[in-house]
Structures are given as C-alpha cells and as structure tokens.
Image (cartoon, rainbow over all chains, first blue to last red):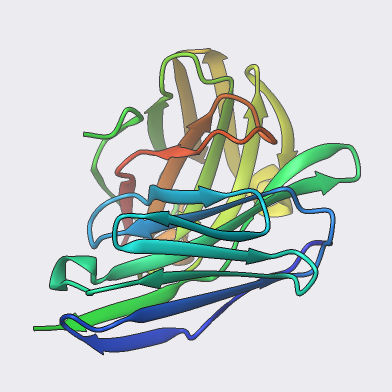
Length: 113
Length: 115
C-alpha cells in the first residue's frame, strides 16, 4: 500500500528566506502530485500540482518531481509571514481497483517576521 | 470562499449523543471524501463516495458512523454515539473524479467538540 512521508515535521524560516519541503512516496506508478496549504481555521487549499519529472514554477513556488527517486518537493522563495501554514503533499495513484489519493502527515511552516 | 460548503461550522455534543454534519460538494464534482483532523495534524481518511455510492471507508466508519450522499448536491456524516475521541475537525472535499489530474476542493470543516 502506498506510503507518503513528509519532512520535516516543522520548519522555521526567516521572512525573505527559502523554505524547502520534502515528500517521499513508495509506489513508482504514482501519477499525480499536489501540494496543499492549510491556514489555521480553514480547510486545505490546492497550491500547485506537478505531473512530470522536473521543475514547475508558479510565482514564488517551485515544485520538483523525481519519480525515479520517489521524491517530490516544494520550495518557497522569499517566504512571507502569510506563508505560515500546514503544507500537505498529496499523491494519486492506482491501488488495486481504483485511483486513490494519499496525503502525507504535513509540514508546519513558520515564517518569522 | 470555499466552493464546498460545510454546516454547521461548530458542533458541541455530550458523550453518547448523536451528531450530524452536512456537506454540499462543488457543483459538477462526482467524488466526495470525508476526513478527520485532530489538533491541526494529519488528515485521516474516513470515507469516499463516487456518484453518491460509498466505494471505500475505514472500519471505524462502518462501526460507529453513518455517511450518505442522497443527492449529488448533499452529503452527510453522522456519528451514532459520540465519544470524547471524536472531537476533531471534520473536513469534506470533492473532486471531479478520483484519479484525474483535477484538484480536490475542501470545505472549511465542522469542528466537533464532545464533552
């Protein structure tokens, strides 16, 4: 069964710094990868997706996927206090007889002003 | 504002009482999921509906919860007999179809406190 692990559990970066969040998965046949962000008191919101190996940049956010290494990461450049939130990695792949989405346990990001 | 609506926002129940929370999925979405989240930590999968039919659920849901989607525009999650450990944020999310490259839209959740 698919296992999705995120690291670190908690991350503190200064305002303007770079935040790097990691996610490893166990199923090489996984197809779709998403990053979600959850601010306190809200539900998670989709931040960005990546489906092909390599980098994908959207503004200050860059996702990197390496299927061979079973690794996906999210890098936040010029971090802002408003980026402080819980970040989830979501991996979608075929499991037995249906597609399944598995969320990692999350990384708490704290950006200090 | 979330395109998935959850009600009520807050729910307080005594131990042993029944609880019910509702979810209106995003229009056009056929997949609906419920998750339990405690203390702003991991999302615990509870149950998945596709076209209003339950296709996957954990044992805890089978034993103590009731979940239905009587229409494509309304789903509900109930707890037959609340226990203290059920205190959590219950999140509903919907998607066009599980397995596509489309994202999952979450509601703001129902926060349940069992006292």
